[in-house]
Length: 454
Image (tube, rainbow, N blue to C red):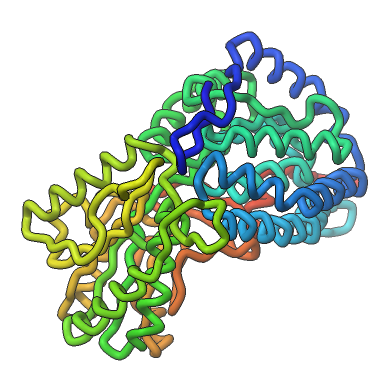
């Protein structure tokens, strides 16, 4: 399996994927390690995770370099992901004890009723490449703290970063078998999910998530799916134009638009439309596309190489054939690697693929609307339900609009934001279950009811 630098197209490393016997052996080792790890006192599990945190901090620059070279994220953004991972670790360390504490729910003469929470068991984590430290850490950190063992398959586009995670756990003193990384693509992921597992967590596309759900359904394996989005933003007629445009350019093009919560379509009140578009295009042209290892670069290459570029080209071709106009970008960058120019389209509508299908790249359509009702109808016109944003100085208006939308995360005057304190979840084609927050820790456990008579 070749690891390719998306900024140059050159091979970084060649790895041997796991075969069926290798995956089976790892699953058996995980099952054998489970009783001892779940019986390990929480204080000792916490100490291991604390040492893992220290290792991440000590190797942060090297880890960021590896991520940038194999996935293409600008180096400053790779460092930002790892720095933010530290605060997520802190959240899980602080709040896991309260989740695991036995809860007395009723007491009467001669009777006590308690609820405790126990680990799922062997947890499979099939992770993503766009934010590998965030996405993987959202699962394996609370899983390990609550007493689970983990079979971890990083994306084939972030394998080197995934293997470094496994090394850091070994350095932290995690016992043998408790955390194991599997190397390979989708076929290895399918093999992993065929093993004897007690829970599965997947991040990726709706198509793959649906297939995984069908694969696990006959065994009733608990499953959580973090899938895609077609995340909308609405700019009202009284919103501050320049500040809204700046925020939404970052929301659309950060990480080259390769985020499930990236802004993928924008609706602007007609009376503000021309002014907003002018500012948005001006901000877009400030983006610096180039070598992701260069500290000045703000837009790197696409990680999934030619296949994703073809998706973007097809969406732009479909839109322009139906009357859309390209204000900037619209094509592959003329340089080695897998770069695509940041692209802004106007005169778009919902007959066009770019306003309905996930882009997952640096392409955005901006559509004028006449009122709140039209904006709301268009924002809801999607099978996805991950995030939605409203830019307005009126918080009551924003809350009313966002409350009417079936999304997991609602943003007022912000976008493309994730907090460890809040649950990360989707509706419809955007997924099942949640990670992060207290709810994300609970997701790694199952409740046990205790009826205690004296």
